[in-house]
Image 1 (cartoon, rainbow, N blue to C red):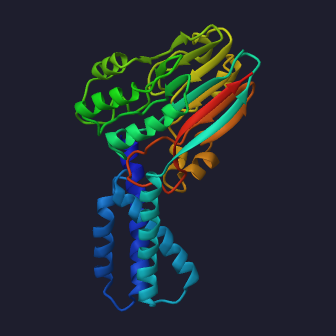
Image 2: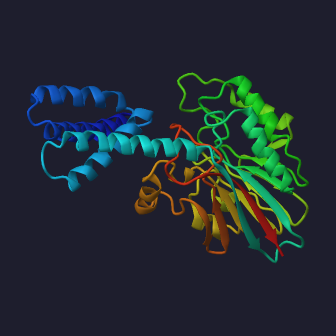
Image 3: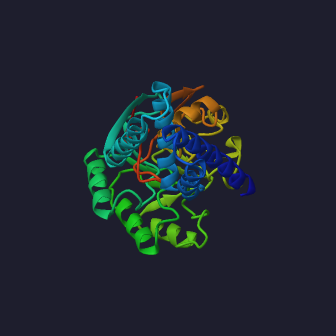
Length: 341
């Protein structure tokens, strides 16, 4: 927590200093103390990088830098003031719209370990109800139902700190309404237990009970054998003490691994899993986080399908989003995967 506060203070201090520099150059005749005061007042609400105002400030700083590189002269206050503001408004309006445009993404995987086609529907990072209400969620689940999946998997962060008890029950009820031949399976993400809330709005036991009452199997370092040729192993989130990849239970035939965060991929492949399904990254959600994830190596795969050794990995961008009501990176989705002989 101390490191987090130091880091965010340093980042926002840099944004504030640049804001002062930009304002002073835009209004060269204005008193410096006035420009400094404005920069401080604008920057202070963004000290928490998880606030929406922080996103606004980062976009303003980015577009201001672009304008400064294009217009070197001091003054030109109309261009220097209004262009960054207009660009920020346009991008964030697009991000608000983009968050709510949910797509169906399909993948086709072949394996000699299955004797007949298996269709998997996957949802991750819903963070219900941050970006949608019950009606919209039901509409997406109805769309999934029309695809006639055999397996329905929930790869974590389905609810979180902003979910109350009634919404928790509603989410479990709606998700449990999807009819499948081989079962519905769920693993915890880093938000499902509301670990970041000062006061938890629901109990983890109540959430597990709600899921199980609606026919959703919770897997925590556990395995479910489906029809003798397919098994699903679900991991605890990496934020908890959990079994190593080699120690995880595995079934016969085609082995599916559910792990909220796409980490330890080489180990998972060596452990003998054929398909890993993950989420967590949101495909970046706010540009350029996805690019930074890839460049920093924080996550080997930020989004999509990738071959890791003998294992296929699919990372979903998520049905919803968290923290900010906008998505300027990637798109929202539910995933349909066909595994065929």
